[in-house]
Image (cartoon, rainbow, N blue to C red; front, side, top):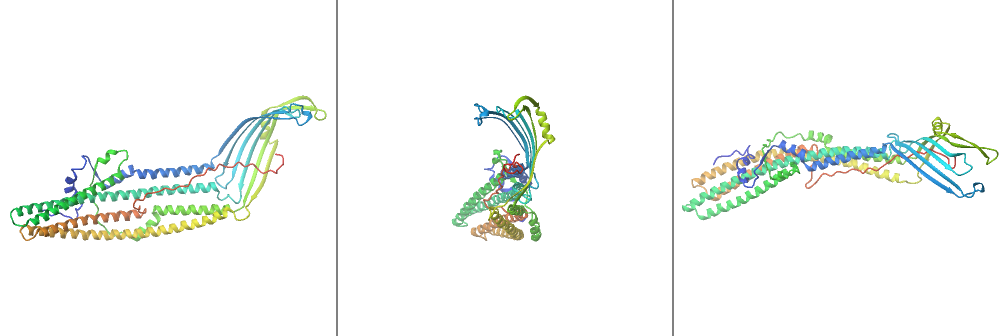
Length: 541
């Protein structure tokens, strides 16, 4: 039997022996796949990454929604009213008073992105006709332009609900980007793991196939010797039982390789390409040899600055601090400066009277709407107000309770970040030890496989010259099979440890059956209020 170098070519067994064995079930088309190709296909087609990418777009849209609180709001209204009132005086006659009014109002208001102030500018016009004999203008044309501003001095000045929502939405968008990057790292790690698992599974098929061939050869030789009367029939039964057992092992190995191939397909295939399920994957890369032991301390230091989950936890802590700042500010008195200026204009057909009240109509004098509009902007009839409003709840308010709750949640977020940092350091150090120990195990497994092969070769030569038994040869074959499978598993364990160590420096491991979840806060619609100035109740405006 030709000696096989198991030390550096354990995975190459698949290419030499496994391919013919699985060719009976494999599809006609075979794709030679490198690890880089597998990663590239994943980044281009993986549906789970597409879902997370869309979630980041949702968070970006939420930022736009929250920014809408500062968008200017344009409003306009136009209408007509009629008001017929019964006569309240004998001077009005028996028909009452019929008033027709046409009016319109157009304005813009906006919340200021800094300081919490709100401004508004509006222009309104009206045309009124009335059957009241005592009116001075019929029709009456009115025009007015108004500018108002409301500025908080304590509550809502450093931060208000709109700014809190906008700041939190931006951090959530940044966190969603970090979560997407984390998902990429974890998915790439899963692809690498699936790639090397498939490579090992195919190599295991080759090992099992070779073991079956050795058992078949031993059974053939025993059959000849039994026919020649050199050995008892029991040795043939033993050899044939071993053939049946190894055939079962080969069937299981093929099924395991098929499952591993489907897992890799699931990660790298384009969901729209259903034909990809019928393509056979041939992982052609060779796993790298174990290198130097990794520097766990340097990896931990880098991870504390670069891990995406820690950065997201830091954003959550900043959000909690923002909530504390907002609710702390809400406990302050609501002190606001209210300012308003309005210019008025009047026009229409003025009824000229002479004599004592109600007077005798002696004529009319027309004033155009343009003149009324000019009066508005010239400030002929100004109205203005400037004042301060103060409001403060008496007793323990909801803001006090909310502030206490926010403080607790901030402390929780800080402790959660510290706990995640400890978890990250522990996981990375453990992964570094796994890389070192599995590398040492690979050397031990290679030595074990080499010794098992030497023992089998020696036992086979002894059997050929009649100095050994079927039992000893079979046992040597089993030991060789176990050593080869153990070498494959140890090399896979080392690759898994190296992948885990690399991944943990950027992202946490995904738990079995776990999935990445996205969470974002709903954005509340916050249109700016319309400042109205400050006037004494009952005073004329």
